[in-house]
Image 1 (cartoon, one colour):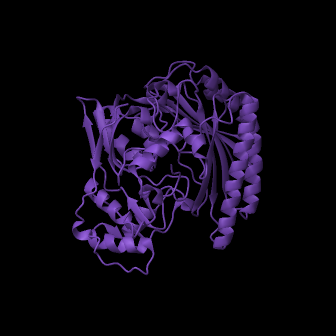
Image 2 (tube, one colour):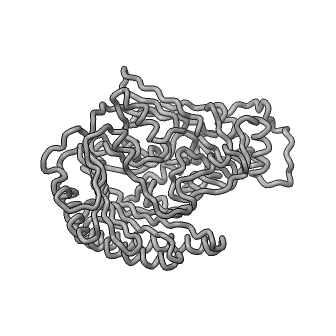
Image 3 (cartoon, rainbow, N blue to C red):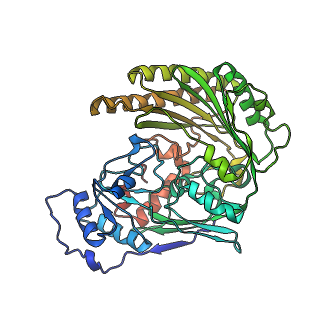
Length: 486
């Protein structure tokens, strides 16, 4: 893949943010940075109590949100460069984070107690029919991108459920509803525009701040699909249908996500169906459609309409905590899925009791693809055609007990983290024993739990990525963010 970079170099003249600017040297780095940012960009900076601040720090999960010292919404690539200059000054070096959509599972990956940079104002979208490409600002959610592209009759490889930001999904790999046909999102990227302290592109947020991404565009017709929910008494039949689809589907336009979730002691199977065309060929989803269900909204509709119905998860009435991880598998044998169903029910019961009876959902999602890596063009996330694995997502969602102390909330969250690790190990051990996983298989970075080793997410690319970091970010400015670093 040929990448063209718009490199916004850090100017030698400091203009209104000269090194001589006075700051209170007795304060912490984040406070110093916020003082200078407020002086340089008074119209862009926000502090606690303001509407912009609340929006800038907000994340999909309450447990992924942190109270920043200040927030800032740059309007141009030049603004981003000047902001990085302040944050990375040798006498400051403030913690910071960059937020696109705010859908990161892990605290600190797009949140911070330092300077929160929100890309909310980067919402340019330009479709070029001549080149068949779309350039998209990284302040967009995929929901908005799809809505804007629909009148042109084209789509790009993006998120599969609402609320996901353009940058995070794409830079981490980017599985989409069109992955069978065109590969991961990263395989359809033509170029990035990047602002960085002294470097070039890397994995996730490691070497710079991406302001826009140019993707290949593909024609889009009406699609067929929807969501079906099944009761616990047919979960084994749903598992058999999922296993059969994983092993035998040959149509690249057909995809599913088949989830087993337990809440209040009841196992529920939910399957999302997608077919990239208005008419479904016979035999594709017949095994699923013949199973008794509790609800279904299957129909022919626009891509935007179908996308908007996916992924709407309600846990309880209060703020939501979330912990997720991933197990790489090559296939989904029915014995593995039935084993998962048993483990999910046991863990949900244990966590619900520990959460004083407040709602907890434990879910594992099978995501079978059809030779998804055959389109690989490389990238930080290794996905070679020689080893086709799919990311089985593991997630625990829970309502936060606002009557508990902060220490008690933290203790329960750590219990959930430990439980997700344990469940992941149990599932992968079973998958390894069935011959559909290896302990050295690469984990999908966008699903991986915080603290996962670099080698398990980036494999043999780690050394190269470390060399890039050392060459282009020698002062480690991008290491002031959270998440994995090279």
